Figure 1 (cartoon, rainbow, N blue to C red):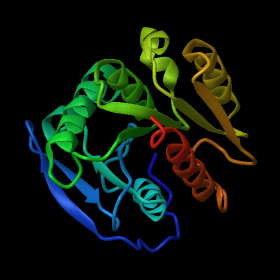
Figure 2: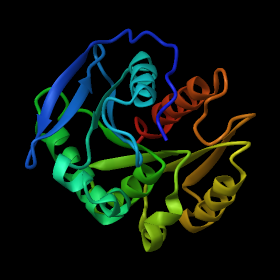
Figure 3: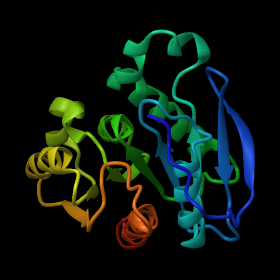
Length: 220
């Protein structure tokens, strides 16, 4: 499903980057004097140019957070649909991106969080299990259940954001919260469906994420 386009003009410039070791394209957003950086992981059917992820990056920038969003698969890998649901593969790419952020002069001094949507949320949780660089995770409309046995081993703050009308995914996230334990929180966006297409829903989800990163990521 294609991303609905949010009606927000980006206030902060994006910088195109190429990420090793696979040469994957990405976009880095650097607000003035960033306080932290968020690695944004898209879900299946999306990419680093997604208007929805751009909107999220800009809301984070207004909150003082730099961000990086990048393609998780190359053109050849995308030919096999199974790769878009290969959570260990996607998580491994996120770990590589986290390493790049930790080595780049522009971001290496910043505390790092990860925000994942749909399957990207499962990949973010699995990456957090193996990468000490990732200090907090937000799942937006995510499928944390696809992270499988990783949930009980994620020992950092996790916020699960779900639309009120996304009832099936809400149930899955409630179950995931129980597996994640006391460091996790669940935020339900009133009136929102799975893609947060309703007026103001995506904005609210991004605002909640930015406020949570301020409280949790910067306090770590």
